[in-house]
Length: 107
Image (cartoon, one colour):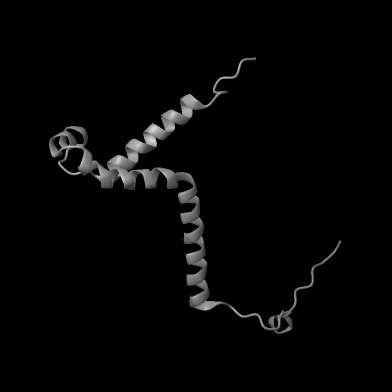
């Protein structure tokens, strides 16, 4: 039978790496900014084209359509950005679904 030897606290091994310190608050903020940047890049990779199209449509819509037509379509006399984003996301999803060639491949 083997018995484990438990060392007293004064004999605990200490590891020291030359020049290495804890980053502190500044390092934590930088890490948080890095995570946020990675999230933003991923979000833009997924929805960038849709967001740009929605911004363009939001800016051009009042020039093309009357406030009465806008109220009929969106329920408000002004264009609401998030409604256009949802509309463009739905159109993009439907277009990708029907334009994909091998949606249901034959066996």
